Amino acid sequence: MHTPHLRRIATEEAFCIPEIAEALRELSRGPSNSIDMMLLRKIYDGGTTYQSSFLAPLLDVGAGRLQDMDENGVDMQLLSLTAPGVQLFDADTATELATVANDYLASLIAAHPTRYAGLASFAPQSPKRAVREMCRAVEQLQLNGFIVNSHTNNEYLDEPKYWPILEAAEALDRCLYIHPRGPSEMLSGPMRDYGMFAALWAYGVEVGTHAVRLILSGVFDRFPRLRICLGHMGEAVHFWLWRIDFMSQRAQTAGAPKLQLKPSDYFRRNFVITTSGQESPLALDFSIKQLGIDNVMWAIDYPYQPSAPAVAFMDSVDVTPAQRAQLYHGNAERIFHIKPWT
Ligand code: 1DF
Ligand code: MN
Image (cartoon, rainbow, N blue to C red; front, side, top):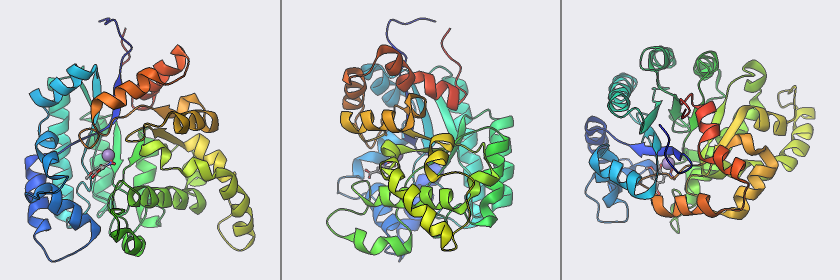
């Protein structure tokens, strides 16, 4: 099935299902004033601010989304349940809703196998049931990887109680995409001003912190084939690798867990990044040089970012044709087990 253009697979593309939108709306009417709740009120409770227009395109996984893809030459979206996913609900509700969302996603992919692939959700609130759902999502639903929206109840995945989740992702050979959500309580305070609370700054700090915790905790010595994906041009973590390497030596001398490798070695071995919402040629050039072309993939962040500029960015950026093909589809096919065009 040949088409004249380079295949474009967008790898961080959000959707929602009515059941979860309704549950999030319900939650958003509660008393909490967390950053997640501020975001939820804007998207799900008829807010009149900038995010109120996102609900319809999140729920539209049919004509409207496919039309946007067609108009912009996007062949495939790797779909994931939008942040914060199921991570704000109690464990039973979250576990149940992850199952519903994964079934829905699998049926969508079955209906549009050339247009959609998908990342499975799970509820870290109950690690044991999360592992069961992860196995089902790969073995029965044949989903392409996993997504988690950073911390759960202010805890990060380096905590031993979450190790079974990391172990399952490794054993199933599926990449775990760590997507942002509102920052954990301790990180939130200074993010409440000047519009910094979400994608402008807080999201990157939250997920970057998560990634650095994973590396420095030593989980990649325990799970050496675990693969983590970070969006938004790696949340800038790879800009810091030299300094993290240097300071990690000192930290290990002072009692931090002893690591077999340098932090930068783990980042290159165990992480991949996407360009979601970060359309800077200079940042992309740095990322390719720092991480290698095999570790960078294209993404839009639909519907939070418009498709046309994301395509124009990747069409025009100064890379070789072979590099463009890897960024647009080759790496995504390999990492997310998407069948190549033949
Ligand atoms: C925003 C951005 C919202 C991303 C998202 O989910 C999200 C935003 C609520 O700009 O408000 O996933 N993002 O990935 O950058
Ligand atoms: Mn996103």
